Image 1 (cartoon, rainbow, N blue to C red):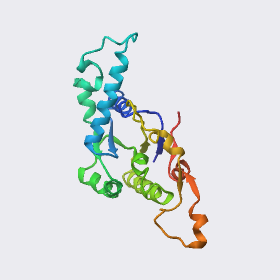
Image 2: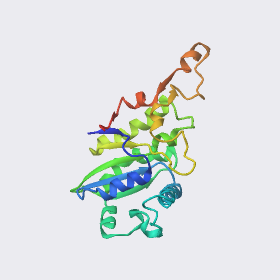
Image 3: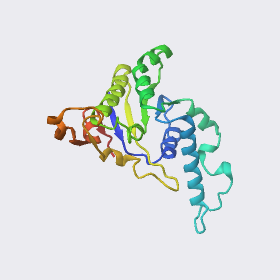
Length: 221
């Protein structure tokens, strides 16, 4: 079983392009998105608009692509795209609690659906972004979620990939994307009182990538 940290893709549009245009008909993908459906669609459309605006700038060779439906393959309902989309299932987990709950019940859901002749992979999008800025962005909190994801993959014998994507809109957030793997996090939730003698120990930090290395390896370039 492969549990990988994937840094190949820079945006959600890049990821969707890869899944749908290079799709292997024998492989399904459960794409677990750590946001609401509305937030996901807003980000996709914002990135498509940004790409279209960049292509339409004076001096750009692609500036004549000004028809809304022709500006990106994702907006064109071709037969190949519709066929590929049948093998990519979107699941939205807008909160950490929802994500952990879904992962803990993942094996039961797969068993209920039944065995397929096709291989299936699990991809979790923006897990770190979801945790960032919360009390769960710690070694303790991330380990809990990582372990839940790996357990779901191990039980169902499916490869697992974690993907962190950058918002490539007009005002991208510097605290998003693959850079989050280098972030330093405390060992414990700051709300946990560990006593006066353990205060210094409680302030220790560790990189997110180091935390993940217990279960994951970085995907080869």
